[in-house]
Length: 369
Image 1: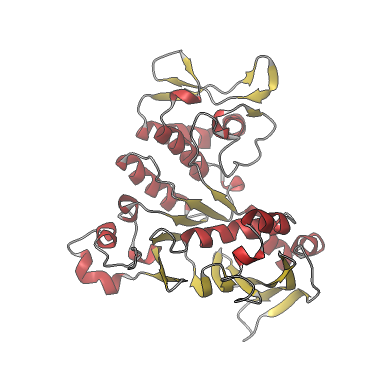
Image 2: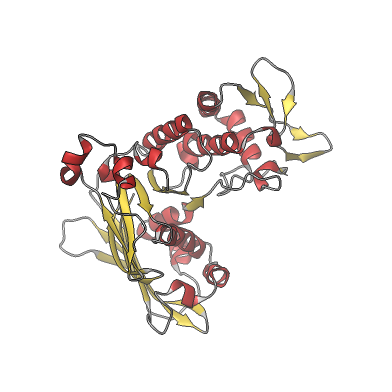
């Protein structure tokens, strides 16, 4: 599990030292920095695919990633620490980025191992040579220990967002039946992935169906079949309970389709789950009861994996404990993050739910004058 992130010089974060737990719910005003923190996971995942420069170009160049640009920030520093379930050993990763002709290159990379028998961690791999793409994927090939574990976790990260449910949304289009080994970040291959689960993981597939029915009682089952004219393609089709009529994805409401994506994400077999599930505003368009179900899914999967979730929903925040909530504020252009604690809020929580306290601006994370 990712237990600590240290940052210097990243977007709106001048400096950050953040401890993470199994459930991490980010709240804050628009523009506070939640999306910037979530985007960091996408950037690091792209690094593991040797696509850092592509990510930087799409983000608008190095000045958009460095804290107030290269004139203010000469380099960006990052440090990550991962621990096992017993927190008896830790693996670390450090890197430094510098701007090079509008790109963001790595000036340093290193990995570490710490078994806590020593006061300092032991370095595993290191490079101080300027390079445009991460060396960690290469290190992971030749090292069966620290490098491979760190690479495996970072390579699994995806920023899930199921916002697009319009007529041209990718989740509603035919997808390749062969594209079914993991759920895409926008659920574009949902039909193929469900086909895989129905065929090879029936218990998890049934759990997904039963959970969908809790939010949408009319739902019967999916009709997962290759297209008759092109057996390589599959479309998301389904039936209502007690009916043989087959509907397409356009017959699902936006909220129902998003909940189907969420149920599939959180209830898929453990072997397919990323080490850290990063998801942005999953509550969009959900019925209040579906939001309660979403919180239950988050809590269930957090027994196996870590969840980092950004939300604007008071109803969703109500479902979590203070220690699971991180408040992101931005003052004078600088973002900060702090974790809530029950002791500080004890007298408030006797009369109000956590989300209500956020709404009343007791917690912070609201627009600042």
